[in-house]
Structure formats: C-alpha cells, structure tokens
Image 1 (cartoon, rainbow, N blue to C red):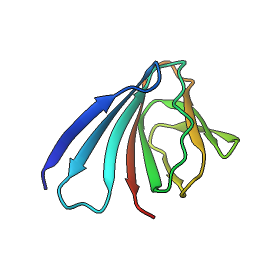
Image 2 (image 1 turned 180 degrees about the horizontal axis):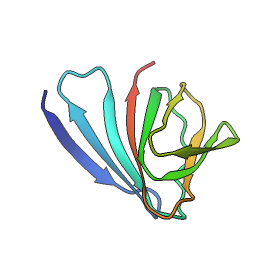
Image 3 (image 1 turned 45 degrees about the vertical axis):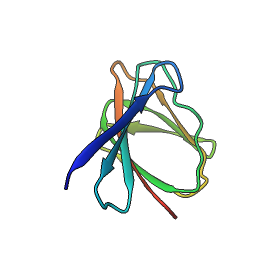
Image 4 (image 1 turned 180 degrees about the vertical axis):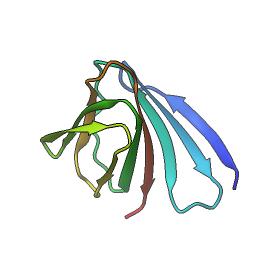
Length: 102
C-alpha cells in the first residue's frame, strides 16, 4: 500500500500537522508535532480519532478533564469530544493521529 504525503500546515504557533493518505484505507492519518511550552488548538469533530504518542509527554485536556500523557500511550476520542494537548516536556511531542467517519 502506497503512503502519499498530502500537506503540512500550522494553525497555531509551535505546532505542525502533516497529513498522509493511504490508498483505499478506511481512515485518514497524520502526524503532528508540538514544541515544548505550546498547546494545540481545541478540537472537536464528527469523526472518531485515535492518537499514539511516539515521542514526548504533555497534558491532555479531554472534555475539560486534564491528564498526563506519555510516550507510548494511545488515546481514543469519540465524536465531538473536545480535546487539546499542551507540551509540558523538554522536547517536541510527536503524535500519530488516525481518524475515521463515525
């Protein structure tokens, strides 16, 4: 299966999101990077989403509840759950995001 790079963009200072396309896959994916001390946008959407933290650590706000997330952890978001992450560690936090229609 061919992985096609689609685009990279930043909607918030200190963050970078790169989207990828997998031929015929029933989901979409991307990697986002957040620099130390920065926070992602507050996000909520109709798709379901799963994150895998493959570098760094931070504080995840999920529907207003804050918890620490670390390298090697996976997080699932149901449709329309508000989520946001702040990089509280000393190095970039890197997250693989996979989402699909609910």
